[in-house]
Amino acid sequence: MSFKSVAAKSAVLRIVGVITVAAAVLVSVNASSEAGIRAQSAQRAAPPKVRLPDEAAGIDGVVGALISVYDQFDVVALGEMHDRRQDSNLRIALVRHPDFAKKVRTIVVEWGSTSQQATLDRYIRGENVSKAQFEQVWKTLPPGNIGDLVSENSIYTDFFAAVREVNSRLPAAARIRVFGGEDNRNRDIAAVSIIKDQALQKRGKVLVIYGAVHFWRAGPNRPEGFVDDSKDIGIVRMLDISYPGRTFAVIPVGGQRQETTSPIPDYQKFDRALKTQVRPVLVPLQRLPFRDFTAGDFLSGEVLTMSRGRWVDIFEGSTLTLGPMADACVYFGRP
Image 1 (cartoon, rainbow, N blue to C red):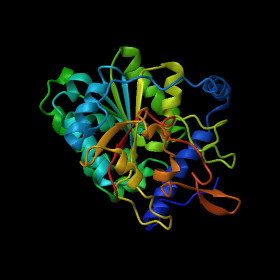
Image 2 (cartoon, rainbow, N blue to C red; image 1 turned 90 degrees about the vertical axis):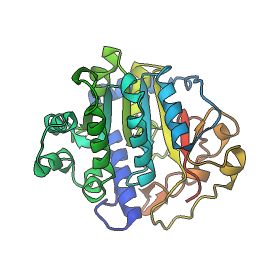
Image 3 (cartoon, helix red, strand yellow; image 1 turned 60 degrees about the vertical axis):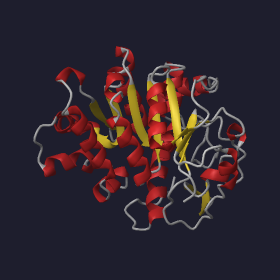
């Protein structure tokens, strides 16, 4: 599969490069596990039922609703649009909530290398770590990956700093541990392994933060490669197979958009269906009419893939609706 590098200064190229690399990684599931996963993924479980308000508005409302999700689920998969401050503000507010550390002790992020876990542990515990050493947490990620964005935008290190600050007020036994989920081979398999070993098998709770594509339960099925349902699995679908009903997937919709040649979606339809005017707002995607909204109407232009020698929107020609993709979305409003 061809993709554009995130190192390019054009913001649209950066987003395309990062997310398309994610898709390429999904296709690289090793042969020993792929056959079994494919067979089981064909029998995809129905989205789990969740008790949430129809609309949880404002950052405080969204955070409160996500905290309450842990009363029903063990994993909250919080998808992000890469390189965006709005997503950063939300996840930092979440970990700073006084009830978060009471429920969650494990976080897995896309922008850290498994090979540098000892360094990340030391930093998150509050120990002195040199700048050069700390930078290895993301600089050892594969070239053309999210590590390039970490070096250029402080939103990712801001998150590490926020967890470190939260831990500074907690006794050692109650502190949060952050894991880098990239092993330079297959980040989805690596993330699932960490989630199982560090949380689920210990009856713990976990927050997982990756680009939203890793959390799609369904995607626009493109045999050219971007989301080929016969190949691409993703973190949430893997967890659903091994631990059905324990993962709550959240994807972003709307909000700030990087420079792009694609038309900006018309969010009026989404706005009209909401009662609140406050943004962001968390909306369960099994709620009508959002469940039946065509995904491409609101997600188009965010991810491109190479098809027959040209860059195309992955939702081009797709009738996929939002309901099958995730359990809820955070709607950030119009750009």
